[in-house]
Amino acid sequence: MVTEELHSIAFETQICLYGLTIDLETSSLPVVMISNVSQLPNAWAAIIWYNVSTNDCQNLVFFNNPPSVTLSQLLEVMSWQFSSYVGRGLNSDQLNMLAEKLTGEVRFHSVEPYNKGRLSALPFADILRDYKVIMAENIPENPLKYLYPDIPKDKAFGKHYSSQPCEVSRPTERGDKGYVPSVFIPISTIRSDSMEPQSPSDLLPMSPSVYAVLRENLSPATIETAVCPPPFNGLGC
Figure 1: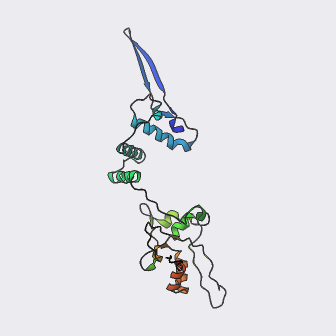
Figure 2: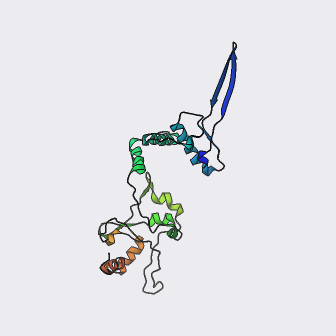
Figure 3: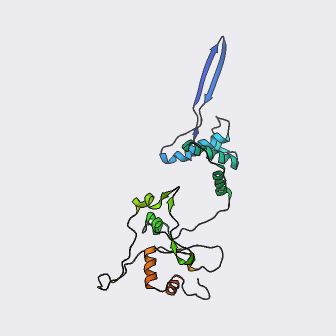
């Protein structure tokens, strides 16, 4: 791997003073040769890891038997690296968060159906715009308001929207628009470790315009039946 190809530039000289000969030698910090900018992060990480873990500047076989590094040392390096870019290091809360991510319990958050297959039909920016969560009383709400720290979502992603929010027109008496157009609705369930049945409020809903049309044309019982199918062999929602 490129991260193992450490090199060092040596500087040697000889000084003669009053008949006394002095040999001087020094070497550069480790150098990693790369052929593509995509290798830069790994190369830079190798240099940082080398500098924090050894005092022997000529130990070019460092990665053949790398020493162990404590979590506190690793966090110190990460804080230093952050400081080299933004001018300040990480505070204690940020370091504790990183430590929890590295050593804490692994948690999985399902993002289905927003996977590669779905994203090919529905751009990610449109998902952020239309994303809804059913809160209390089955009222869909969009929890995504701002891009950190306080940039409005539409201002940050508006230029990436592929279309305007879907406004579904209602049928008229003249019959010129007698059908409700179809709309792609991504739906996923929030996975739970327990075996308790899920209620409709546990589902990630459709876009607000489509939800409004359904509420206007269908009864609440019909909507609930469509979302939660009848039980099969005692199993159901």
